[in-house]
Figure 1 (tube, rainbow, N blue to C red):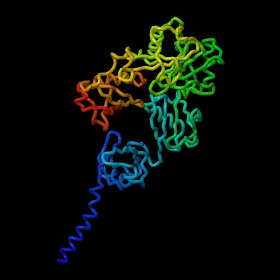
Figure 2 (tube, helix red, strand yellow):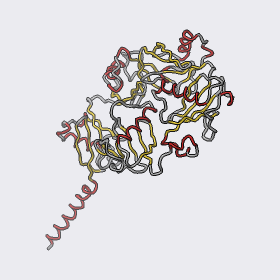
Figure 3 (cartoon, rainbow, N blue to C red):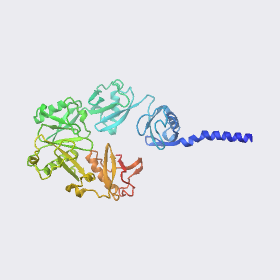
Figure 4 (cartoon, rainbow, N blue to C red):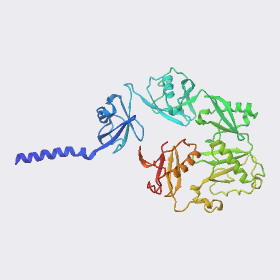
Length: 449
């Protein structure tokens, strides 16, 4: 009996030791390029322990511990060896990304070209020329040739250090982990919009706004001191500013004003935009709206089809301002040279609060419709849909918003229902309806293109 009791006691201790591994065990997904593996870990396992497990996995290539760098799926930060899964909040089904580096320590920096951005891995002894070679190999940045690149390091907004010596190391330039480096072109074509005309000018990477004004003086004859240059994201640009602050990847341009015409302000979901148009006193409000549509077509490749434009006499916060009547003229409203008006653009999905307006009553959504949230890039839009709407119909609506937000994609777009994982919850069948995909009020749909 004594031996039997002792055996039971030993078994109890063993079960006590073993049970935590069952209760705390979980599987995570480790991704290395196109390879992946599901690995069982404990919440108290350290990153070093995880690396030791990765080293033994044939599917991932048996990568030595010292060559592994692991990244968190959410924060994209490097995981420190001594920290645990629990400390990083890593749980069941989470994804960890694996990179392989040499024995020399590499760290990530953020590299931007226009609106494009990517992470580039560098080491302290890399020269500026080495960094340019890496940038030239990035499809995401446009494979910019080395000889056309001019690099600059951001210190604060509108404060830069130019990386002009190709032989200097990034360490000598004080570039560390997470540093922002911007890519400019040695010489490129820039556009200035003046009175609905686009003027192309050739500029250098380091060109200032003052130099742009001198070039525009040669073209238009307007003295530099009478020019006001503005960007769609900023009210006014000062002479000492450099073009890097106002570049767009596709067609960089500024807006020039000489004090004539009227200024139209409007909110484009992300920022205030404005433009100057020439009007006559006899122009009706309807005529001005048509001019606005034509200008918007030049800028954004869109005539605001399917949208209602409302104009009012105020500068910014005009939620309760009375809309100008289409039949009345600029003279009747006292709107002339140097005046400012405000524009509001309403899509049919946004007209719930405009139901009292006779002009919008036909566009008000049926009350049986419901709204969902669509995310793409940095934009978030509310879209009204019906249960019988197909995925193709939803894509059409999303594309219209993408076009408006300058994020239109060529070809088909991919939509996912939250929560999503690669290959899961994708709305792959264009003919299926919202009901068939069980999409309900308030659901979140995201485009990952």
